[in-house]
Length: 206
Image (cartoon, rainbow, N blue to C red; front, side, top):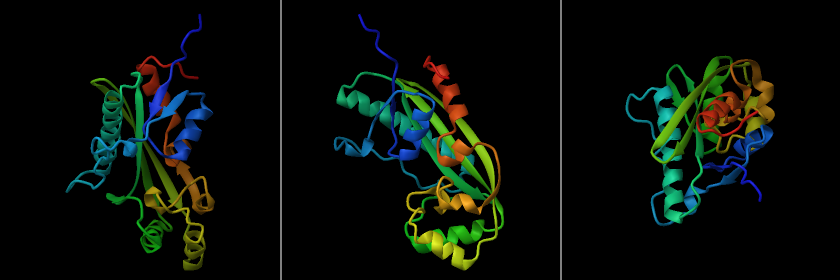
């Protein structure tokens, strides 16, 4: 008689988060919320007036995990913990979301150029009415970026769907002079905090 291996659902379309979970041997199934037409399946990602970046990113990750577990019930899928995460970049209290086009990405990169900013990633796990969230905060210092360098980076289109308009695991890694915090957190899923949460839900981790 075979023993069922523990697993979780990942409520994210991010290939980076899939790679990071695989890196630490976590078994998961993708749970794509936007494919369910029976309910509104998006969390409003607009910051509330005066909302602190730390509060904002935790609210989004919690909401995504809750929506994911609700989707399980709608689809009559086996109940397993649902993991969700959200990442934001912040500088001087300003939230940098995902740029909608290259000009917006260029504006973000100019603001980050030559300065330190924070990358906040919140991880949430939901199982029934039980939801827990942990926050990872990292400080990233960019070198001074010339307009030519920004233009070359925009031509890669790496900025698309990336908070702050850059991806540390891509060519923008060359912009970064120093990181204080979690490399995996800057990528979008802090592995230390993820393992801590999984342990709280009795999931075996490395």
